[in-house]
Image 1 (cartoon, helix red, strand yellow):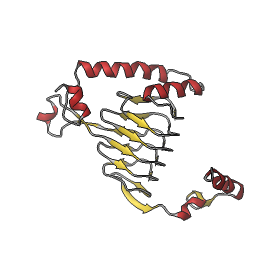
Image 2 (cartoon, one colour):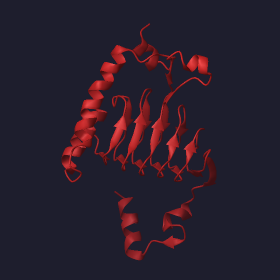
Image 3 (tube, helix red, strand yellow):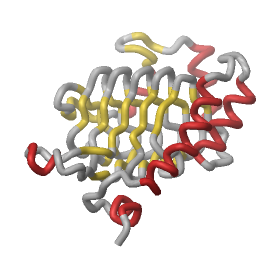
Image 4 (cartoon, helix red, strand yellow):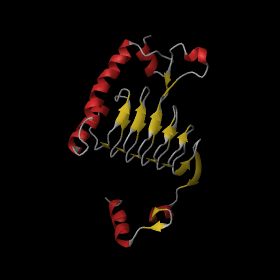
Length: 209
C-alpha cells in the first residue's frame, strides 16, 4: 500500500515524492491566488473555486494557505477572512453558509506524541467536519478529528479539541459549550443590542426567500 493510500485512509504515512508532487500543484495555484490584487474580487473567486474544485458562490480573502485544496469540500456561500489556514491532509467538509473570521486554522494533520515515533517521519491526517450555518471566531483552531454541528458559533481564540453539538455557542481553550442558541437570539445583532425596525424587517424578509 502506497503512502497516498495510507494518508487518504487515515493511516500513518510518510510524505513521499508522490504527495510532494500533489502539494506542488496546490502551491502554484496558491501563489497565484495570494498574489492577486485584493480588489480583483471576480478573479479571486475564480481562483478559490479552482483551488477547492467547486462551482459554489464562495469568497476567500487572501492570504490563504492549504496543503492540497482538493481535500477541502465547501458548501454554498462559504467565506473565509484574512489568513485562513487549512491543513487538508485528510478530508475537511464544511457546510452551507459558513463564515471564518481572520486567522482561523483547521488542522487535520498531526504527529505522534512519543519522540521515537515522531522522529520516524510518520504523520497522520484525521478528517474534520463542520456543519451548516457555522461561524468560527478569529484566531480559533479546530484540531484533527473534530465534528462541529449545525448553527454553531465558536468564540474568538478557541481551541476546539472535541466535538461541538448543533445549536450551541462554544468558546475557550479547550473549547467548551457555554449555552444553547435560542429563538430570542435572532432579535439581537451584538450582545444586548437589538436590531432596529428596518434592519429587522430585512432579516425577516431574507429568511422568507
